[in-house]
Image 1 (tube, rainbow, N blue to C red):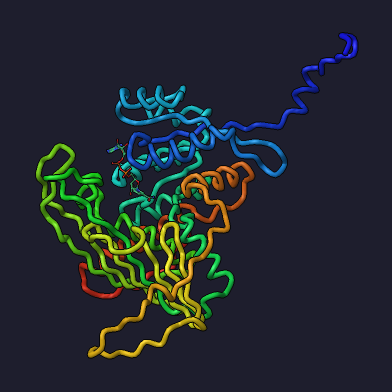
Image 2 (image 1 turned 120 degrees about the horizontal axis):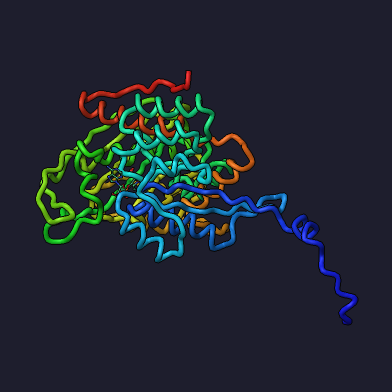
Length: 402
Ligand SMILES: NC(=O)c1ccc[n+]([C@@H]2O[C@H](COP(=O)([O-])OP(=O)(O)OC[C@H]3O[C@@H](n4cnc5c(N)ncnc54)[C@H](O)[C@@H]3O)[C@@H](O)[C@H]2O)c1
């Protein structure tokens, strides 16, 4: 090829041909914590950055630029250096005042969340936050209303819905496999060490009510969105909370008295008549295939799903047990179940939800997992705690922004 045949495109034409790229600045507050670091920074935002962003149907791209925010400059500097991130600060107010950062994302301890969210909403930022969105229903609803009044888009983590096992369950429900769904039995939990002879594998604030801890506040917001998105809105709850282990040792090896429940036994009545019963416990030794499992019974079939796996038993393959305490039962009940194949590629659930939220933000579409959905989760937690205190079933009123 001779030199004369090469025609370099004019700069303007070159620019027009390149796909449009929109870089979104994200304030990541509490990024050095367990969830902030592993799930939101490494598994979501950095994973999106490493794959070169998210491609939209029109060929344009969304890329992400994180601003690490926390209280310890040394920790932030270490994270930034480790992952090649340019921006970090301990000054949240300055970050919120800076228009380069469009989204405020919150992974703080639950107790610190409402104050930070209020500031971010007032600054006009788009909000993406861990659950629970607040410590009380009143505060959670107030935040949802403030965001609606300010016209800011909001998103709340609904990660369990994205678990491969629950996505398989959704597909079973949508296919009509169950017939009429009768009941759901959930088992969640594992043994969390007390912290004396082995360090505890969860933060000590989880076991102190005064610090926003407790398994009801932690897990009932998850159960609320799982139940309402798969089986029906929660109409009522009866819960029994228990502090099974009062003596625990914190991160420094110091003894403290647990003031928040480490187990909760809940019964939930759902719109449409399904009854769900979910045990949540940090004081149970695992004897199941996965750390969370849901057993769903329907008129036409049943399923047991976990984080990854799902197995089914249709009515045509249901055995006919006969109760006889005098005879040892040699039937292999496990063998009556059939594995659901993994026909999809599942990415990390936190990342999948981040991607959906970012696309919804850029395309300005409605996003259903918002602060009002988050407030329903807090409502269920509050009702669960009240139910346990008062020893009775609590009905849940429909929430609205009016
Ligand atoms: N979606 C899920 O599956 C899931 C799982 C676990 C926890 N969570 C939620 O994520 C949030 C964080 O939990 P975690 O387990 O990562 O906790 P963590 O203790 O590991 O991290 C908490 C973060 O908050 C910061 N922080 C603590 N006190 C603060 C204060 N007073 N002011 C400002 N910052 C403060 C810490 O420096 C840290 O960065 C909680 O709200 C929890 O309910 C969600």
